[in-house]
Amino acid sequence: MEGKEREAPSGAETGAEAWQRLSAYAYLSAPERLEYVAVMRVFCGTLLADLAVPDLLTKLAESGGPGAALDAETLTRRLEELVRWGNLLRSTHTVKATSIAEYQRSRSRYQLSKLGERVQRDADEVLGGADAAREVSSELLALVDRGLREIAAMAAEPGGADPQQALERISTLFVQFAEFAESVRDFYAYLGQVLARYDLDSAEYQGFKELLLDYVEAITEDVSFRAPRIAAHLDAVWPHLPALLARIDAHAAGMGALAEGLPETRVQRSRGRDLADWEGLREWFTATGAHSSQVDQLRDATLRALQSLLANAKRMLRSASGEMSRRKDLLRLAAWFDAAEPEEAHDLAVAAFGLYGARHLGVAPNPDQSVPAYVSWWTGPVVDVPVALRERGSRAPRGRAAAAEDHTEQKRRLMEQARQQVEARQAAADELRSASGRFDQVRLGAPAMRLLLELLTTALGNAQLHKDEDRDFLLEGAQADDADLGIRLTAWRTPGRPTVLRSVDGDLTADDLTLAVESMSTPAVGEASA
Image 1 (tube, rainbow, N blue to C red):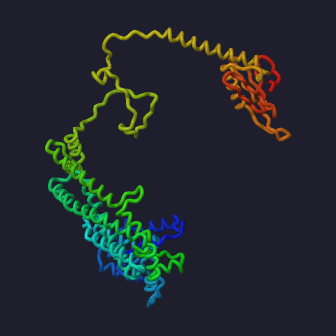
Image 2: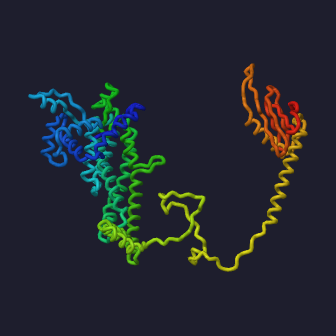
Image 3: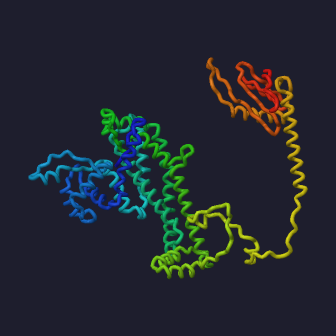
């Protein structure tokens, strides 16, 4: 029985190692996958044996199948690929040959890697019966109950349990539990696959109904009966568990001693030898924190299965009124399409779906929107069809033409609004000209402050920054004009002299900056006071 792998040091498994392990599955998806599987099965049928190309050719020819037709050169390429993926290892074996040709054929010998053997074993298990309904080994649950009771009694004895007897009981217990848990997972996976079908006929429905109502109900009742007793036995043995496991390790260290002598060697211990194995067993039967137990999940899965069964029953009841699944009919129609000629396929489509020829309407598209020819009609833009054309099939207008709308009042109102905006900006410009040189002494109105910030933003955007002889920054060309208002704003850098701009909306301090506002027709004014 394979056990839990001893935990490696933190960070020991890198991304390269994970990539190498996943590469061992590459041959299962290669185009020559059947040949690779045949070769791997030959290696898995041996123990500690290294095989050369002639040996493999003989064994493949005896077994038949896809690998029997391989020649020596092709087989060598397949073996080298398996070595690159990590499924095989090159073997160091002394070669005895009577000729150079025989030496060249036999010098490369290969043996199975542990990862390759594990991957092939899992692949054979999937190919052998992955879609079969696996019977749940419910009788093992009673053995798990009995084993836990015996271990709890042994741990509570004066002087502690005998380590050899405890080891035998623990190993047997975890083998039985692992087999039971695996059979439960396989069975419910198969059950979910079956109940997902929506085309069950009456005979299939009757069979699965009996399966659910009888077999699944028996499993659920057995688990519900045994789970509280197993949880009680686990609670009884839990305080004695660390001392019991330490005593077993002292009695029979097994391969665990390699982990201490060879730190780089990873050892898989038998199940039940580590406390983590017992924690997994306990979580199966007892809810811990925010996670529900596997027993509760089993009940929920059974309830969902019954709900799916009821959904199929409702579908079958609705079939009497014609509300039934058309899956089988659609599959039959698809087979007809597959076997039909192009002309017959068009007739089938018309008869089955009523898809007649398209009716084209002469509606011009939007001239401002260019649509490539490869754009599908399903995702392309929609062309607006006039109501008259859509309802009557004619573009001719009906009824009396409407009078032209008079927009005189709207134009007058917009012109008045534009005039007021121009007057407000002109007043703000006059206020800035009058306040230039004494910004810290006056409080500007909101329009004037907005205009000042607008000009300052433009001026700083036009400015060029450079350093003088004293390695200090200077501004050149920091100027903004507004020809419509006839004003110009000039800014220059004055280290240590800020300019305070006061307004009804708040104050703004421009550090190391001096501003001046002037009329565009007058010479530049002096610096504004800070």
